[in-house]
Length: 497
Ligand code: KIV
Ligand code: ZN
Image (tube, rainbow, N blue to C red; front, side):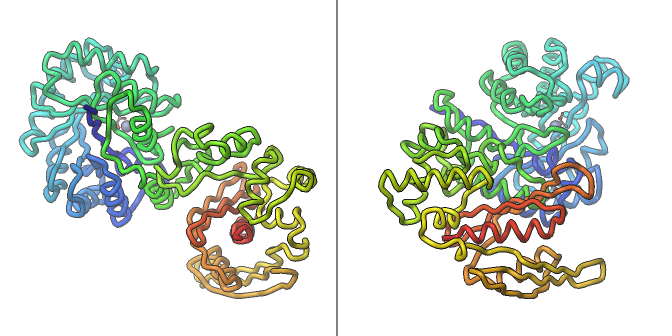
């Protein structure tokens, strides 16, 4: 029988602490509802004493959410606990998360007290929190760098004081997976009353080991994991929810399960990324743009023969429609033929060899070969027929101006122009482009990245659009980010068959 691992999501607390990722209350409720749909068990909704805004968000999330436990963070301070209890008053199921630093660094240099005093404060905080709620989680901050014998004493004391969950954070992301796993096992074996509480992992990713450490924690007895969507969080981030959920789902021999509806992982990832203006790195496991994209010839050939040759997860399992075969100079004949057949063209071996030769010449010049290129390469249309090309772009915007854009696009040799307004210059330009095309397209992802740091640098834009259930990618780079955005949009539209 599989054992359940509780998913404690801290996107709205540890994740939201990241500079630039702050959400307003309405946005937080939207994320909380998406987390509830996704199937998380606990939502850490905020740190109520930190600001009136955070307090209000915990109140409103408590009202809006039905199934998951709503958790509020506090320090081991009476006032924090009182404010958290107040913020949680409307929660159907509530938890106070209180704690204190336990490592020599924190005891000596941050709190400036003694190890004995830390234990007393921890006991007092847990007992005080239990006066308000039945479910109290205790965190031993910087447990990763805390001596195991001392940590065991702290944990035994807080469980005796009434803690129902004990959180063992690797706050600085320092532990090695084996070391963190041993720490959890040590607590399991040496804390006399450990069976009265659930052990929780809370790992940071400073050395890129957050997921590995979390999994070692679980393998050694932890039954709650503290995670965030896309792994966002302080510095290098927290353990990412999607990675842990899919590891548990893929490795049946672990005999574990979660209640995550994996098919909602991708949409939740994009919602959080968009609302927090935090792009997901292209090669991020599970949810990155390239996580299911194959571009080398050997891999493409293998995937086309049998998907499992190079994919351990079916993309549909995480809510991604299909894997992508990206045609580049490293693609082989098998991938080229596959795409030509998908376009409805069948060629004999000799003809295919010729097209492949032309394909390689073009691919050396162009990063990615799209379907329009293929039609020209295979002689199905003339190069004059290709083309949707941005010929002209003019935008007016500013603090008091209504953003207006005029675009001129060459379509099949003729330039068509259109003007539109929008809520910003890019929105206005995209609307003007939409007026010139007959297809309905939805913007699924829009990512702007500066290549280096100066204001005069080249910006790269990646765009993902949806048309009749299919996804198309567009890319452009330009020193003018609005031009790059419109070009990327047109690039994606031009790939629609
Ligand atoms: O990383 C950490 O130690 C924390 C605690 C406040 C739980 O986020
Ligand atoms: Zn943390």
